[in-house]
Length: 313
Length: 265
Picture (cartoon, each protein chain N blue to C red):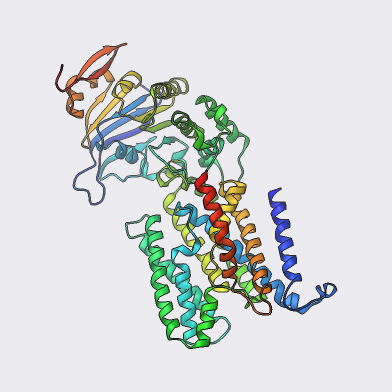
């Protein structure tokens, strides 16, 4: 029932995003229009997939660090990705894939660094150090990024700045395909960890007594969630709040078990981001807002509301 | 006695990385099916470490810790969770959940990777709730429970694992008299009625003496005394271990401890 509802909402969002846009496509021509097939549809699909990936990643990371305020980008990934992208822009790296690849490399580099920090205390990944290390690595990368941006020329600066706030204007069927090939593996790994994640929320020692291999669990969750986020950031830039809000919304609506949380978070994240992107490219048409601005503008008030509910109950 | 040996700890020595002294030193403990063991000792005497080492979470420096004849460290967590149910001292409740969901967590070691909850799992949850007199609580939110109800629910979760051994780490701390007695009675009933083995860490010398078959007293990581309550809980031992003057009086065939005033009036 829930899934039928969510699937219906997802479909509606996608259809609406095909129908609206700065170019006026008459309703009768929608199925034949190259604007719809080559621009709007891949863009909507990519936004949906990225939103879903961020939602799932957020669910996994909040359970891992046992902190309801965790966000996929809190662990330093956005800083690393931003640095990678700005370096690519500053060096004028050629080709359409230079920017996403550089962002991906930056995100994975930050992930590796934070992971290494998390293991400092021994063989066990320490979630508290992951959080602190993530914030520190992110701040450091942001400082270097800002230094580079401040030395850049005006047009470059604008490009870099806009990229950091995320957007899907570069979406094509190729990016959709790359994402579709890449994302299933971390998604399946996370889905397989749904049950032990329910246990991990109780704490590491209780989880072990209930049969979870906590050491392996933490590593797999961190790596899969981070790799998902890194892919999202590579194709769409840094889009905040989806990974933070979506898990909370799903928990409030459908309970705390990860077997329902993962699929509902994927669908809800997809719907949210596809809708946000539709707004981003229509409200100030023919110009575009970075989609991260829309998610933040919608997400922050929503988050305030959730926080209030949280502290009241 | 030919009851099955479930926990076999022999001459166990443990030390945490960087610690100046051993957390445990040459401790032995055998727990068999149908036995209720109490683990006594002052704070920091190594009780929880013994429990962790016996369950394979702390690797011993020397000695052995075996569950059903197999070294504790060699068990997978999942297999061990089908044999041993633990009520840990504390756990986190980050996100709200209902009682029946919590008890169902005890079935996790029995569920397959992607498979659903089977009828047998539902039945085990039901039996566990009945055994702990918690059927009426099933639909309540965890955070609305009283301390005594909460501990019964956590015990039900451990029972839903269908274990051979129950381990409880200070389960009655902060419970009032009735709830404390109810929990001890419940554990005793499970041991007598279902042939479970139980190992309980507690600070309650008198209740340990009343309910347990065997008592192990630890102090500074060493076993001070081990055996039936009447043999172990002597005035000399209790005074030495807990550093306080006491009197020991028999009641119902079991020793009971009365703490003395430092300056008798």
